[in-house]
Image (tube, rainbow, N blue to C red; front, side, top):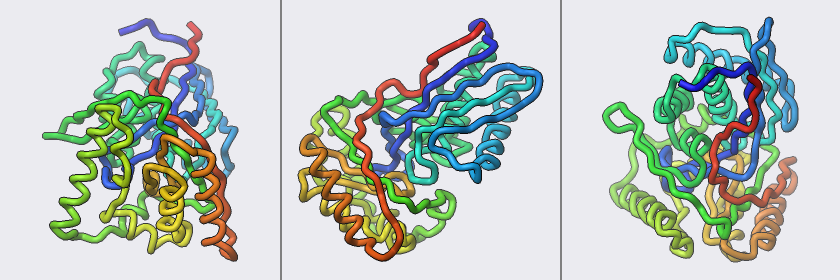
Length: 313
């Protein structure tokens, strides 16, 4: 265990999960960040700012208390009053891992304040259990492209660094999608051909990242398990097929629904500006009269994961 601190600041990256066929398995960390400072204090308090709305305060505070209770139970440390200051840069309820950002940041900070009683794998397992899957958790904590899953009750994961030549173009709509609800609309059965197709594309995506042969990602982000059903169910996602097609036609390797949405993500080696423009124009055309709008974020992969950026002894 390392010496305890009185305050720590951590930087937590956003993440994009699934990458099409890699449902609950694949995740990639992105150069979009939140910063969290946690310090010992006399009275517990929470402060949120940045990309934030006051209606999320209660939800976020509930997440923080749940993580605190879990950490103290696992670490056997005595609870202490803490103050939290979150400067949020990750859009909430947009499929960019905003809940993971809070949970990972709090757990990393608590573990550092407590002298690091828990190892990385255990931290990942705790976040994954809270999230319901390990995809965002692994990417946000470790950085890079991660492949993760539970095997015999234990988390197994592999991480690949991603070159800066690969660009991620995020179309972030104004509409929100709640992850829990979005998971409830899937069909109970899929055909054998669909299952084989998704498994094949997933394996090829992992191979392309492992070998840094990014050109092999061409047209691998299609999915039959979750994306078509979410597109039909949510008005915010009605433009998904048209937007992903526009991204490919503008030069992207492919595009997919980031997590449960509503963000739509293109992956490209070239013409990132043109890809983003085509996605935005298509979204706006498909949503004329609906009241939905969007913004484009030009990102890369973050290879550092959740890191400590400051301590006070």
